[in-house]
Image 1 (cartoon, rainbow, N blue to C red):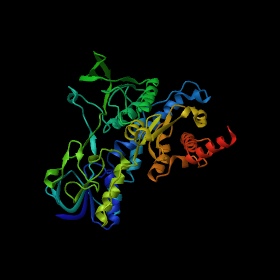
Image 2: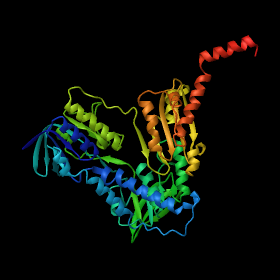
Image 3: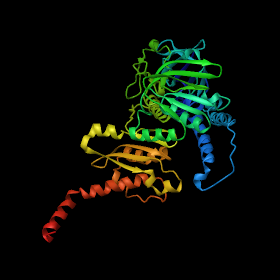
Image 4: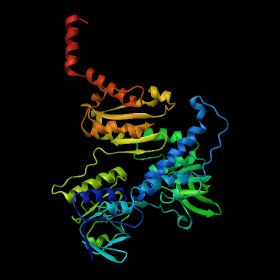
Length: 475
């Protein structure tokens, strides 16, 4: 029986980051991985989806080149190789994450599926391994809704959508979270006739309602068909078409397409014999404390298998915290106070902290939300990119408690506000920085100036001076 100081179950981003830190601490470390290192992020998530979105944007811009004052003959753009290109980029990234590279760095790679036998031992393909500590980083898989007939047809999820040989002529997307909206954006621009079906009335329910509605209208303008407030009766497959039967506006309606993408959320991978290790979990994932320990203090859980924040950057931060707590004598708490996220549609939709609605509900009259539209930014005009808006929720003392950005480069712009929020830089101080011109950062500069002016006008000392001057001059 081989023994380790730490065994990490799962070789996705969280597991890989944790392994490097633990080896640096001098811990004998192993990763158990049943597929390829890199996990969903590399092979069926962040990397392929953003590659496909970039290709889709290039195709869309080329088709709409006249908006830049350019003209051309009819463009014939072949999309037959785009999915091969996506897989090629995945291979390039994976080349830096192979077992050989990690073994050379001192991490033992165990291939196979792990199952706990007890608190200290796991079994992997008939072999037993012992460890003092464990980190569970098994991630999540596509959550499949209960729709009659779905089990009898072939359908797409994030796990196989990038393995297709060609762009389908038509696609039904069931689900309106980040995966559903990003893939609807990409495949629509690449020539698929896309229909989004939603049980709710809108999209991206965790986002600011006004901004997600603007995004939805833009998707519709590009040709995406959206049906909200639907209920699903059944699905079926006949020849090359798949049909979804729904209730919509009180009537039964059938919609057919070549492919159906299921994007209705993520389910944690908890089939690990956790009861044998005294680890508590439920359908939402493994329960952890603020130190990322499970109910068994020698076993940690990080990433999508345990947290409600299913983002790679959160998983990597949890990897740092958990590995440090194993390797160092002083325990560190995880904090989600200043995290952010971004949906990489076009335009992008990014968020940190509270939405304006959440801020108002929590702080009432103590909070003010400042808005600025992309169409009022000179850079928006130069780039012919005027769709979007920023909304920043600020307390009276200038503390930023949330920000939402819809628009070009929102995922990059949000970091300036995240930095200010994380390090308690008040909103008015952002107005004192000299911004480069012309840049999209103007959407942050202008609202911060609004707040600064408002703060000056409400300054008690300045109000006193103004009143005193009025009394002295009689004006």
